[in-house]
Image: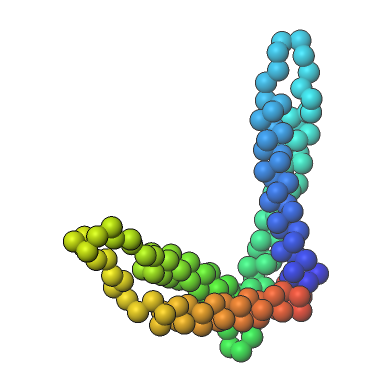
Length: 150
């Protein structure tokens, strides 16, 4: 099984877990004399099967990510780098949106509001970070589709 397939299955199992949680809660109580729409026991058995499969997949994905390297970096390191790039870019974009917004003055007697940073220079930096993010994500995707799950 390729790593990408395992990641897809993991996402599916996580969605199914949420769904089973809702179904369990919907069948937790009934009016006296009524039957639940679904058997809570059967739902709990399905829950246990899904959790066991998910635990196995997560362990194997993490093991694969920590042992598979490209250009001297593990997938785990690439994922951490990608996540940090995303956070940095988002914060910088929000900051630049704020720094570049115009404040209208009604008259010359009002206080003039100016940016504290060179917005265009920082925007170029954010563009470079975005490019690095795309390249990192492409590396991760390539590894996901070419790496066998351990």
